[in-house]
Image (cartoon, rainbow, N blue to C red; front, side):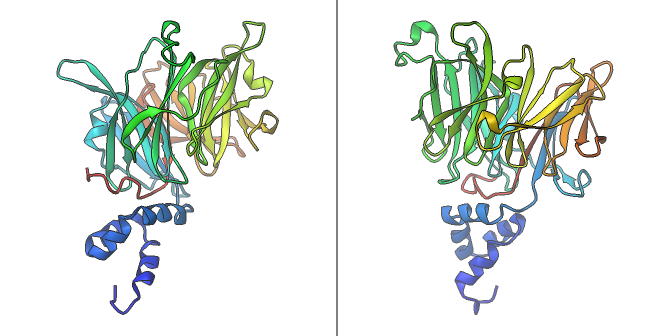
Amino acid sequence: MSDHIPFELQVDIIKRLPIKLLIQARSASKAWKSVIDSSDFIAAYTVHNNDQPQHLLLRYENLYSMETYVSFVDDDSFPQNKYSPTVPRSVNLLSDSIIIGTSHGLVCLFGCYLNPSHSRKPTAVIWNPSIRRSVAIALPYMDMHVAHALGFGVCPVTSDPKIVKISGTRRRHRKMKGGSRWQVEVFSLRSGVWRNSYGKLSDKLVNLKWPRSQVTIDGFIYWFGVGNTVGSDTEYCYLISLYLLSEEFGEIYLPNELAFRDKMELHLFNFCDSLAVLRGRIMDDVIQVWRMGNGDSKSFTKLFTIKKPHMSIVPLGFRMNGELMMSMADNDEDSETLIDYEPFSHHINDLGIESECSSLLVCSYKESLILLDQPDI
């Protein structure tokens, strides 16, 4: 870029570059590298490029039992415009991994590292697939005999990635935990340490529905919680929220049609930057899609109902155009196929990806520079 162009204008130009060209520009000039690596530029780039195309990251085991990652551009070219991202060793080494969530271009996975002694070390990995950066975080002790949940999100104010760990406490240990039924711990990437959360969970929460029931939208992490009706053993489902800046918890009650249905499968997804709850059971022939409006039980509206072409269908997530991606098991339930549902035409498309049964996971992300200060994979 010409030396005659003022440096401020150069910065304004490079922050409009696609992320691949931006990384190349970072290597071309020490002055540009200094600017691009700054926390202010990284935060501004994320905000300035928020209208860029969404990407869909698909993780599955192919029919040869090989774990495979594929990324698609979520636009009119879907599913033709795809590529295989470079998967970091920190992700490949995870055993029995699941995707916790995505936020600001980052994907967070949870699994275990196997030590030479064959013991399992619970670990989360935060991965930015756009810039080939990742960081592994060891989790505090997890008692698998009590309810627990994990959450992930990037604080929209500070751009600091956070992992949240919620654990039930055994009755005999509650005095040491301040008498609370729940312990909440937070890992902030900026601080690099785990600590107790600033906010507290209500003791009326008796259980958690996790995994596959966490989503992050506009600086809030949401989970499904289970409570007891006063004076009754009847359980009901509701939403727990955590604001990533203050770490304060909130509660959102669901409509009775969602909260009190026995043995019902509920799923939580991001639907065009709104919170969506999907209702249905494995043996039901329909799935209902509900969307939350302004954050209370009265703001939930039922958007549409999907008539399932096959009983063994599991919802996986929404595209930006509102189409719902799902996995459909074959008749022998040895393999499954990725499909999507168009809510207006009710058309179901086979996306041409077949995997081992129950291995398909889908998440969405937009390109960002967060984790640029981490080593290249």
